[in-house]
Length: 467
Image (cartoon, rainbow, N blue to C red; front, side):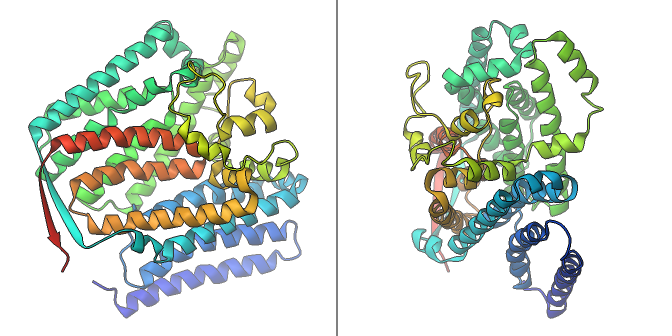
């Protein structure tokens, strides 16, 4: 149902009121320090919010898990919030590199606009054929087989991780270093543990559709949560939570934006504290451990929170030091996708990822501590092809996301697609953060097993023409 004229006017009124307030603030700051930076930051937020507002004005309901909303929301979190933090609290950092911060913001804004051009074009619609819709039915007996089979793979993989780490005590007391060492040469074990997400999503969707939640399902859910948390990586657990919300959103009931905002905030706080826990396990000096333990809850939560989303800084440093310290990669970090499945224990000299390249060259003091910084998608595109990479890469990313929207609109009754899309949404987050080859490898690995599982459990498919 389309919104009434009065509702549309109300949306316009609030939006333009905000716009006028921003304009007044900016005009009042015209002779102040960092005025151009403030203009760019303000424009970034307007460019990220306007498409959603316009869609609402046109009468379309805002789907918080649509590719457009997910992308714009994450884009502002990763680039907009750090920019505001710099302007309000760390202006001295901007002054040291004001030229490069301006360039970074310009490239980030350009990337956003070319994504929008690709997304709102009809290319994505042309790519996807939308003549038919599909409804599938699953076998609960086969779902149980998938749950047992993949759970065994995950459990055995985790037990092998513990063995390679010297036992459970050695692993959990030094989870950071254990994780780094294992992902360097045995990342397939970590990916095998994360496979437990697949049967959980499938079983969750089935229970939602038929409103059946046996007690054993909740036990299995806790088991999968613990497995993901035990990996020492924050991402898999957060991705799992997001995927579950996506399933609930499309199978049972639309998730309210306020609820999702609250969950997002809680997950960000979780990311912050879990990082401190991981740092605590990575310190061998007992005195430093005691000092960090003392500040575990008393340290400035806001600063640690912002430190998790410092991708504007990464883009600025890449713009500043490429090609002076780091050569243009000309697509190498993207083509590395072909080599990522090969374990480092077999091929120790295989091509490096974007995160390793920029950390080793730009942040050598950090690299010696076995820490790497992901470059963000904008940073990686610039690292490979300068501005041309940002233009073409973000345009293509927009086209791909539009294709997912077309699929989503045409398969809202298809449980197979809902589980597939619930796996894709966290990957959007991963791709915006950067390191294309690593994110894509993990995604492809999960999708291969997901497709096998869906093929096995699907017992009936009904197709019908669109009206």
